[in-house]
Image 1 (tube, one colour):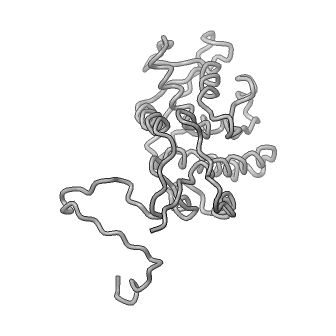
Image 2 (tube, one colour):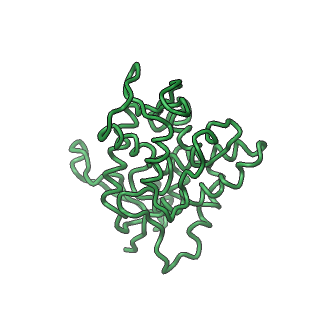
Image 3 (cartoon, one colour):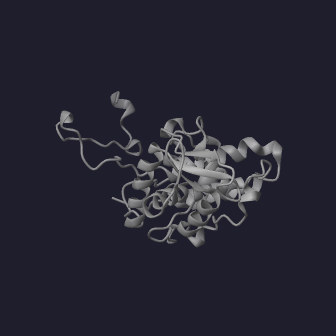
Length: 249
């Protein structure tokens, strides 16, 4: 049968661009937040997303972005979808988690009450190191600018989403903890990777090392194996074949 490419990074770029259009208007804050939440959800999805319909079905992706998702891949026949380079990421959310994991493993963090924390300035620098330049997602402002509550930046906004206790309920978040630590660094803000973030960062880093997913069927089970309780047998059904409703399926 026909095989379909992974489109998740096209969706991430389209939604990030959409959020960027709304950052100057406070009355569009809800749309800005919804776009960022959708970016975070898609970036944390570890299986290929091969259609706008599949992306729309993910919990946390706003359904009213369906047309934007469709447009991001419209007329793409014969054109390869966008994929970041190996070991690189297409958005700040995934890059931030892996950046903190790398920093934990390779440097001496500042000891905090409950764990290890890193200066905001260092986090920004390490995020940019992991961002694929073609995604146009780098953080180009200073830490001081990002600390401005009126600065609706779609990149740094993803970091804030990772810190939120209520924005990632369907993803077992929060993933990062933001702390005020006066004198620790120029910004006085440090970040700590929480256990949920550490586990996700490891998976995202492994995924980035593998490079783009191979084309596959439009609908695909998220796992390669079936539990023994099901007799190691699974059945896939495609509604496009028809006949199901007439047979009471």
